[in-house]
Image 1 (cartoon, rainbow, N blue to C red):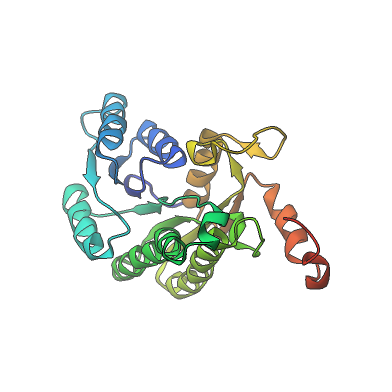
Image 2: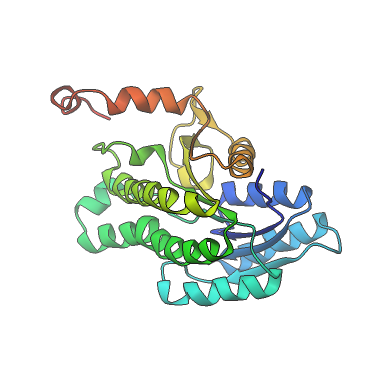
Length: 251
């Protein structure tokens, strides 16, 4: 069972990450919370401090994670604040408008950087840290969208597919060093990021339920987890639809 007592959360202002932070604090964890929105990050960490004991460290770090030049410094500061790291969760990202991306190359590249390349930058640095330590767990929020390219969100899906494939290789490498890499694939989650979606039906999940699944998967060192669980068989079917049929579908 992996320890989640000293944790860094990248993208801590997202709805899912905030719920993860709350649940970890209730379990006695110390946290470094990294986010871009200073006001929102302060509000979240102030709330966490109220929930924490005097022995728990709760510190905010304001940073734009799309700027990879600051990643090494953020990790160094986190190590200094916590002493050492048991676990990290990479949870930052955006949900782009596919049509806007189709007509704007710069927006497409920006979204690929935000949702894919910036995560890979963090993963590269963190992998080296945990490899030397020979213990720990890295959790990364990818998406079911990365399992197969679909016309409705293939820019976002391509970025998340990049993260999924990268973590597969990283998991293979670090398993020999007793380090777990957990690829987390949420389906539809009721968050501000999906505010424009119609949220009726059984496929939608709440952030607190997804957060609970993330913590459990990281503690157990799962390789890949779909949240909620039923997305695994759904995506298994979608991935195996023959291409000549898939092209005719509007997904």
